Image 1 (tube, rainbow, N blue to C red):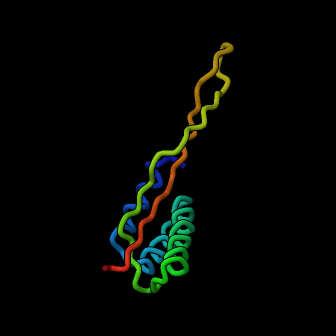
Image 2: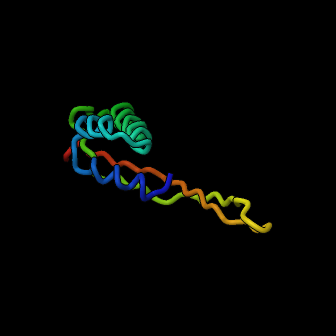
Length: 100
């Protein structure tokens, strides 16, 4: 999914608590929201298991969708020519903080 489409949804959750961000993502009817929700749940699990932080104290400090590699494909066109198709990908990065 293109970084522009994912970026619109990541901007919605910046600065919110982790629980509020999950609720917002569940209400957004976009495919990118499901992918960001999965990444956010993973970030919460990493914070609680690896750093022994309380899940209810976490908030989203930064949520970014950076550009990943592009897949280059071609679509047949009229008179034997070919038109390029660029399938964009994105890297979703979520940074959580416990407010300290």
